[in-house]
Length: 481
Image 1 (cartoon, rainbow, N blue to C red):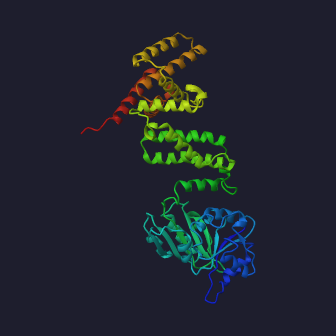
Image 2 (tube, rainbow, N blue to C red):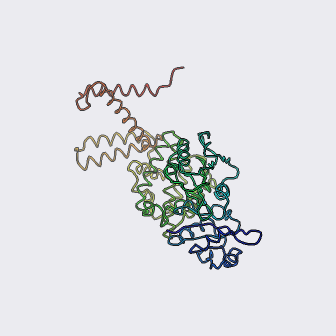
């Protein structure tokens, strides 16, 4: 892969471009300028170099930084590229930072007088954020909570660099990103992205090197838009091999898994875990949208537009004139609207067959009850439960008839849950968790008593189980005042 350089065209008082910048332009295979009529194009041509314009790369002159980054990275696959521009190093916001993410081997910058100048002007730092500039010998005195930009100067040799890396390793995670600005022999500086861990293994052969360490927690540059951009980077030809090979079908199981983990976090009461798991769910949505965009079938904008339209259509009591004052009225309206949206599917046809059986039973039961196929009261459901129990008892074990009767009983119990306002899926998950907890307590107690579980008598099983239930109750009891 070739190299990428950003070359400033500032002239001295006599109108001459810096000699180091000129040499770097002449050494490039491709010199890129915004347009054929720009001042940079004229100046590059005066140096005997035929420039390539944004238009030649398929870009508009006012292309975004992300678009320019993609074009430069693609052009540098087998050639050395230089982007020539006035106003260096503030070429355009986000350009150099974007190149550091995408370009292999870093970015060269010409001409500059010091690494500090490069880092302050080129890395799109938030002007409102704190910036600390310290000498390498003072790194040990920096606080451990890193919420400011940090620039370490005076990293003049490998010994100092490794000592600095060791001190940074006590403050930041090994994978935390840093940027090293080192002077090039031919003038200018090279920006190289590294991790804190890799910094300690890097040889530094030049003086006047500085290290930029971003805050440990920076707000995303563009929120949701940044997530979409990052997924595009992962799916790019030179992106992540795993992400590139995914399809809608291959991701289906991951979507289900992440949804279940999100549900588990919601039930745990751990807000931090829930935020993390919801991020994983959102990742799946954006991945599918990126694949759709590449296939030309849909984009993330289509996904967002679709759900906005659907929410407005299914909430006429908010965005229309329909009146719905209770959750039950909202649910009935919702189901009626869904039936109108897909009339060919029937009342129950839209319930996915791929849902877990208990969850599907709940949805089917609610849909059927929503149009009047319902018991008058809870007593009627209980009578049906007892009827199904009797039929199951009369069936021969291990037969298809017994399986059918068991299914009927389970489905009727789901209706009991619905009538009682209970989510059967959540209730069964909690019971499973409770059983596992009790069993593990029982297992630990038996082990402490020197009794393998497989050797326990029925009476001992009962004793240990009763002890585990009592222990669970004691642990869940409120402390006395």
